[in-house]
Length: 173
Image 1 (cartoon, rainbow, N blue to C red):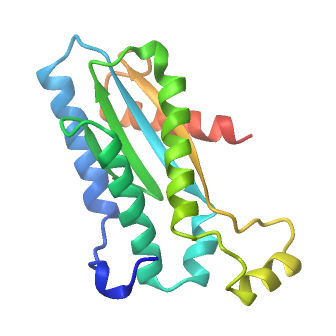
Image 2: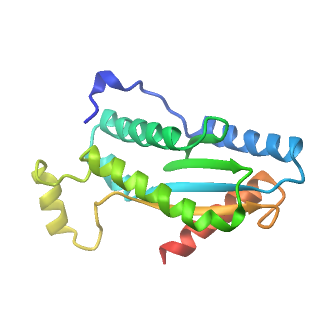
């Protein structure tokens, strides 16, 4: 488990959204004819988790998941925060294996969440009581992965991001 001293307090949502957009814009400018994959990994039920946990625990979760993703992805590829998760771009990848890659990354994020005991209800009586009081709103954290492929799913950064987010919501149904 990450302690308060291990994590720097950083507010990233606006900066990372612009970082992802500028990164995609750079890819479209420098390599206009080569396809690439963009994956968006969102952590489901994060809003409930943020309400019930201190900020340093939430930042620790993002730090651990980000470190695991950066260790798994080649350093030349983009891995950054986006909304309630991460965005990844993979250049020079076969677009036919995007499902396999997304499943493996989801398994990695699930393993990281379990290893950090962020879903451990044995030590938090408030979580156990919350589950009994609100049975239809699960508190378990789990990843959802959406993806888009350039140029098939769009030619602008926002079109690619929106398609990946739409794919993520489509798979959640």
